[in-house]
Amino acid sequence: MEKIKKIPLSAIIIMAVVSLSNLFGFYVAGISVCIGVVFFFVTKFIEKQPFRDSGLDMEQIGANFKDRKIWFWVALPLIMDAVSILISKLFLPEYIDHVVSRTGIFVSFDKSILLVFQLAFLALGEEIAWRAFFQKQLSKALPMMPVLLISSVLFALGHLREGNALIVAYDIFFVFINSILYGIIFYKSNNAWVSGISHFIANLFSVIILVFL
Image 1 (cartoon, helix red, strand yellow):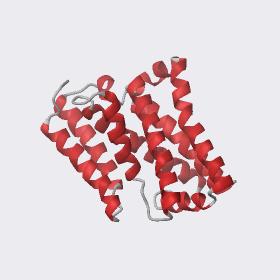
Image 2: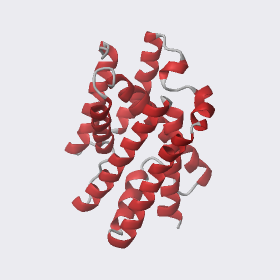
Image 3: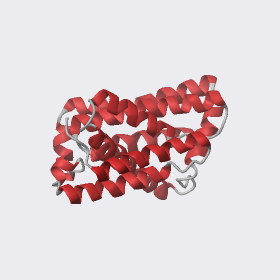
Image 4: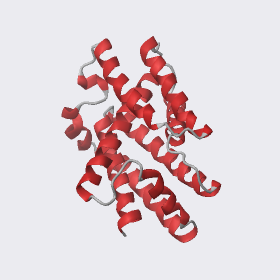
């Protein structure tokens, strides 16, 4: 295992603390994404990483998708979202209002073109921060399974909002599962563009089903 350098390690700790702040009602976890994105590029500059090794190689997107196995993983978050919505429609209808209120802070549901852009921007930002930076750096010091669990717990807590305990737990559970899946996609592709595409498709599907249907 490699040793994480001081600057990325400091950023990882700050991201964790900011995400955990949601547990205490501060709800500023979105800042962790900004921190992760900034320090992704800072670390890339300091370590003089080429894009091929950084986890954000646009030229490799086509090559990644030539592997048919990756399509299965890319589709899984969408399937999990479909399962969560189906179950909620049958047993937890309040879940829909909870998700809409949670995401309404960041997206404009009344403007379709802007909505698509916002969802794409947010998905890629989260993947750069939590996968290309946090996961990639933490994997220098820990095996992949603990890295996936730690990053996904923090990622899920970053989506925590007040509400009925059962609804909140249900919401966070599926965010956690999808985070694991995005982490696996990044691990297999070493490309935040690929996990970002999966993230965007799943988010867009959920918004269309939850808001427009």
